[in-house]
Image (tube, rainbow, N blue to C red; front, side):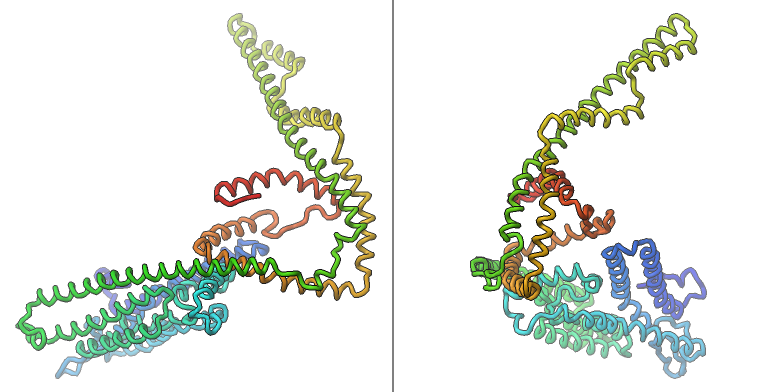
Length: 576
């Protein structure tokens, strides 16, 4: 259907009007199917999976927009062709140029024009829909006035937008509409869509070839001047190549207009005396030359821009490093210097010191017990396997004796069961039950033979909790404590914000190329977190027993340290 699948060769009633209807309706049907699938996926996605639901909506929105973007020029082109009629001179009969079997004066065609006009209007409004969607988020795509020529701010704004478009469900499906353009030209894809429609569809409605050539060349020249002055793309090389393409389009239309000067025997006018093969060869060579020259100059310009950006980036990184060091060295605000945190109150500090003295031995005992338990369970498992192997060997020997001596199978089986009941054999299921019991018995014997640091720690925590509760009550009863805490929080935020911002800017300027890798790594982790038991939300499993909370943290510390160490070894990062 798109580009002509030749359905009229197989279906007698299939004409260009049917083709125009089908070409217009099939994308709409696919669009409906896309959103039906979205409804089913959303139905089977839990209400707590917010990130997954937002991503599913973004995926289907993006699929719909991509579909409309891909089929728009072709569909509109078929619709325009279905409205272009010609008249036979002297007969007064009008027929459709794309299908001469269709009478443009027939009632059927008049009804078709009324229907296809509505469909054409719908498709022509698609770029306006793009504009509406982009306008809703345009405040998140703009850059502050006056920063376009600031190389440092330009890099930081691009990085911020790249992070935002991954976390913002409204930006994700629209990326292909504004990506590649400078932020102030976020709407330029709408201009491009109508330009494609003009060249691929609207020009077919012009009545004569010479006029089509004139309008095509004029549009190409207008596009050349517009793109040269506006330069809407982020990459300078893209702007250069686009200008070359606009010149190429204009020259192609001009040359095509010259080819129309043909009297049936040869070319006239400018191309007089040139054969058709020569004229075609000139056209091919000219187009290839334009591409080669564009690629050469574009590559040369790109290399210059890259070297310049590297020098700018190095200079900016040095500047940001100095700013970060200066920000870290600044004195704390006076309100923070005058404020005494709860942990530094003398009574509270003494209590915490007593707890700290117990934490390290308790954590060490937890890790030792875990290691001992693992060793014991492995040793016990080996012993159980040996018992089972010996019992199987005995059973095999008895069966062999029974076969050789002709003993009744039933008596052999009874004898085997009697020996099994007397001996220390274990079945597979019973071994699974026996394994943790034996390990725990051995484990209890080991732990009871040593000083129980965990019990001491629990006792210390239980004794410290009433003291801490009383200290909290006293701390919160101070006069004006709420206003003081508000002032401390405000000063902390404003004081450290410059430090965080300076460090972030330094990372972007030095390792900005790794930002895309970071986004690709974090995205699946967020989705997997939502599929887990907590549905992506951190939940406190121990609410009141502080000692138990610490013991669980001590149990998790060793595997966590191993994980962090492995990440550091894999990435080359320094891990303390």
